[in-house]
Length: 314
Image 1 (tube, rainbow, N blue to C red):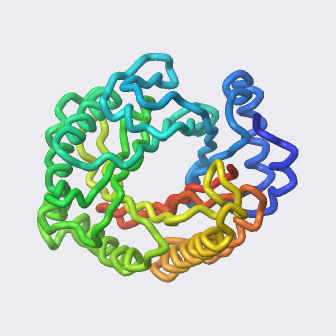
Image 2 (image 1 turned 30 degrees about the vertical axis):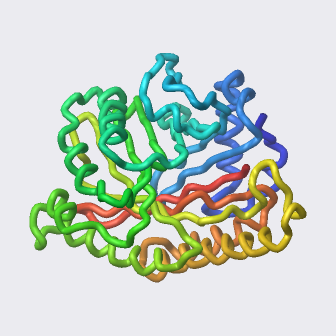
Image 3 (image 1 turned 90 degrees about the horizontal axis):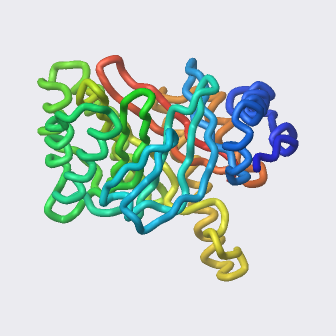
């Protein structure tokens, strides 16, 4: 159950979390009392400058089965569902549930999982011609299992799916750039290439992880590529453990997390993806109890770059 009193006490961030955010969450609790009351005492937020905020709620889900119940009640069957982690987030925008975010236990990107992703994309979007998605996934599929499936951001409302692939290497091939941008002199090609090179600098830092984000919708492959920048380790001890279980390891990982958030946010600011105001707030956000940095997502396409912050309280 969401603790509105606690939320009100920390609503001191002009951009990331203020009284308007608390009011929006309170309104969702009133509109969907049964749905919100069954959620964990966690809040997810997705914000982009100039865009409407999204508010997410965390739920436990069964694991190890190839079936998933979507928000609207219909059941999906997919071999990938066997690899889901035990939590999902439902996100609301303008008081309408728009996104279901699933995370996976990192199955490798290989032929069977590519088939499963295309099946999932067709089910979510209604577009059965997934050949363009398959093409880019096959380009990314290397012999040494360089990519792992990390997340699926599903929107039945928008008929879209964003697939997050954990990226072990620090580059994407020219073939991928040409698939998205056609030629090296197009804005799409140049913008994706530019962001990719900058992200390369950041992933050399062992404190941070990177997911490449591919989007597919009812019209086909979206000609944008995103990079979700996150921390390798969590701020607190892993679920089911305490800092005292192994205090030395805890301190090391705790500092790694803080360093990663600082590096990601400062790099995003230096590269003009994030304003200084947002950067200062996300760095200080985790001073609050239970506050977490989820990911900083940079998406590049024809029109340049856009930034999303995924964060919350857990």
